[in-house]
Image (cartoon, rainbow, N blue to C red; front, side, top):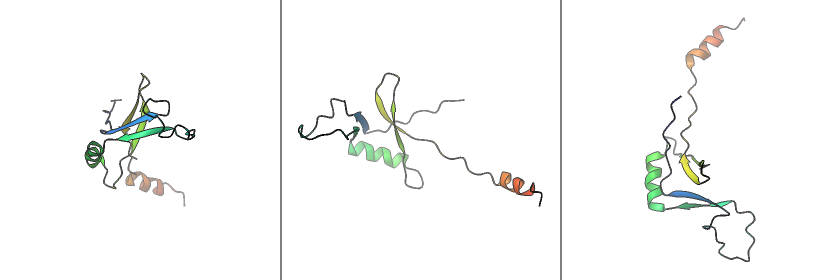
Length: 97
């Protein structure tokens, strides 16, 4: 099986709560509910989104972890396989009644 080329989300990154990038704005506030932070470089990300949005107006992005432990954002390229009309017709023809 050929491996698909990764499509990284330009202008977007994700940082876990433990990251140096997540210094609380107000250290006295509890941030136990914060999982991480999505950082977006607006101009780069908008350009990337325009190129990677599907015909229905969506672009799905997965947050993944590399073998080295670094988190990254990648376009989710999975698409459902279209239903084959011939198979559906054949199944209907096989009915005993």
